[in-house]
Image (cartoon, rainbow, N blue to C red; front, side, top):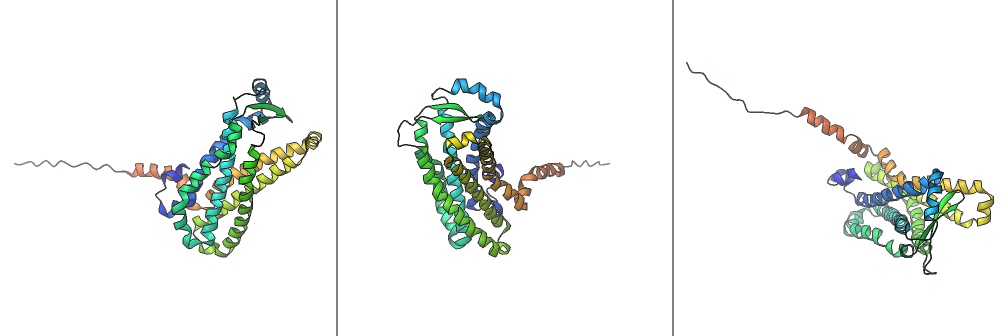
Amino acid sequence: MITIIKRKKDRDLFEDSFFTLHLADGVVTLYFLMADTSFFRLTSYVRPVCEFLIPYLKDPSYILTPFYTSYMYAQLAKMLSTLAMSVNRYTSVNHPVHHKVFWMQYCSKVIVAIFVIPCFCVWPVAIGTTSFLPFNGNGVINYEHVIPWARTTYGRLLISIPTLFFTIYSSIVTSAKLKKLGGHMKQVEFSMNVATVFTACGFVLVVALQVSYLLLNAETLLDKMWLTKVILAATQISNDFYMLSGPVVLLILDKRMRFSICCRNRKKGSRRATKVSVQPLTLVQHTL
């Protein structure tokens, strides 16, 4: 993210609108990972922390409401950013002539939509109380349904289902095009397309695991604790893959991008070392 911001003027490497979308996606991903690691993973893997927090947070209150609202907001924004990057790569491969003009006109509007649309889906969480309760050795946050028909599930389905179908479709089409045009594309273009395919695969895996978890009834989850633990662990692993696969693939495939991040400080050091200070010489002429 820092490299993209600093080298945005490098038209040969970071000129594509994909990197603007990738920057917005990076902001959402960074917050989601920080929130997930600092609370959910900490309470899942460090049991004393979970046992310490439950007595203070088990009763309904508004203490965790801002945190849980922002966490749900980041989930939905991540889905939309994934959809936007998939559309971006789809147009670059299938409509290369109009791709640049289209995204020059609508890129900023798409980014605004990524950050605004989730607000219309998470307000049921924002107006209700939350409680932190133990479940299968872990702690989960439940929120009060103030309005019975207003549930975040509907908003998540409204965003995730179109995103799921389009990412699968665009990944298949993009992968097929990459096989045909891989040798004739710029390396950075090829890297961006492959990174988007990996992100889409991670998204599909996350949604599949969440659906499988929801389809299992409470009795099955209680009777087969090993299955519950496997699904929860697989969900966290797939979530990490979904969040981090895109940037990692970009760095692995594109040598110039990797060099711009890893070797920039080294370049600055070498420039400082080779800098020569030139001072004017004073000539003194002696006359006899």
